[in-house]
Length: 314
Image (cartoon, rainbow, N blue to C red; front, side):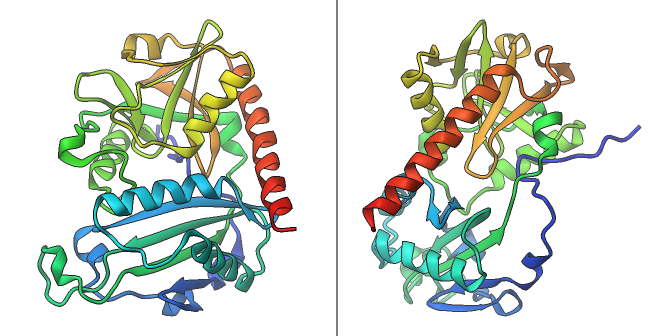
C-alpha cells in the first residue's frame, strides 16, 4: 500500500502561477524568460543566500528580521548585495504589484555572488556583481496539512558543526538537506528529522522542529539549526503568554513520547507532525490544542506587525 507523500511546502493549486512575472537583475520578466547564466555562482557552486517571506495585506511580514538575517549572512561570506533593505523592499513590492498581489503570496528572494569569468570555484572569478532574483508566487498553504500533519523519519544525514557549514546560513548550498529529504522519502515519510552531531533532535530538512510535553514547549538549543524567524517568534510568543518554553537538548525518546509536535517556517507558519519513524505523536488527529493556540497567537502577531509597518509609512 502506497501513501501519498506531501511536504510542509504544499500549497493550494493556483493557475495564476503559470503566468508569473519575476524580478531578475533589475528587470521584471515573464517566468518563461526568467533565466540566469550557466556561469552564475549560484548555479555553478550554490554560492548565494536566500530568504523566504510572505505578503500579508501589502506588507512583508517580519521584513526587518528577514533583512537582518540576509545581510548578516551575506556579510559573513563577503557577498556585497549592493542594495539597502529598503531597495530590496521596493523591488519585492514592484514584483508583487506586477502580478496583482497584495496578500496570500510567498517570495523566494535569491542573492548570488553573480556571474563568473571562468567556471571555477574562486570567489574572485565572480567579477560582475551579484545576481538578484525574486520569485513571488500566489501561495496559500494546503489546508489538508492542518488536519493530516507531516510524517517524519529520522535520517542518518545530520546538521553539522558550524566549522563545516554553519546551518545558520540560508545558503543556496542545500545538498545536505536534499539528501536528508531523499532519505526520509526512501523510508516512506514526508520529510527528514535531522539530529545534531551529538545525536540530539535538531531540525527537519526544511523547517525548525518543536515538541509539546506536559504543557511545555521544547525545541533544540539552536546551535545546529537554521535561526528561523518563525522559530524565534514562536519562542517569544510562548514567553509572552506564559507558556513554558525551553531551548534544550533532547533525544528521540522525548520526541516519540511527545503530546504534540509541530514544525515552524515562513511558508506554513506552524505545521503539525502526525508521526515520527512510524510512531503516532499524541492522541490528536492533526494539530493538537497547543499547536492550534500558538497558531492563533502567531496569526495575531503577523497582523500586529503588518499594521505597524503600514502605520510607519502612513
